[in-house]
Length: 147
Image 1 (tube, rainbow, N blue to C red):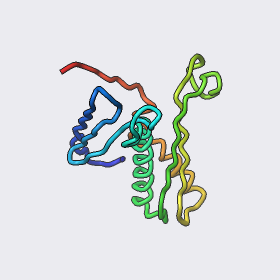
Image 2 (cartoon, rainbow, N blue to C red):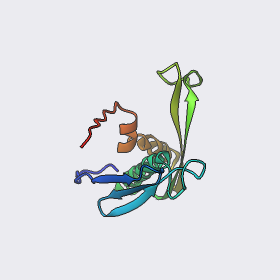
Image 3 (tube, helix red, strand yellow):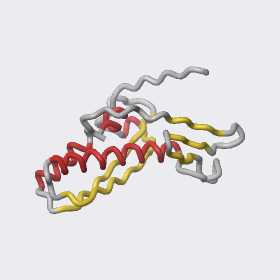
């Protein structure tokens, strides 16, 4: 979410057994689970891609809501619907990559409230400025190490 104050980043710990896909996820004082569908896992939680989409959708909704609140716009609620798929790069006209397969996230936003068409357009533009969206569309450097 876009804020003016920087909170201390959460410490995320994921623990699983080597025998299956089920994972315990601890995010500070919060607990949740991740898994794969029954076809691969035990379906005890959403898949890692589902969690990624939840992060993007949550951030998008929070960012839109914050922007509208700061302007006292009559936005009542936000629904963000997301889907992830893999597509052939040749099927993506706006993509830089032209070979192989790429990840596609489709993000649909429903805005409820007596907004003008200009306000709606601005809120859809602002959706792309959520920090998670910015992270996913920028260069990402992941450093992995054994401890």
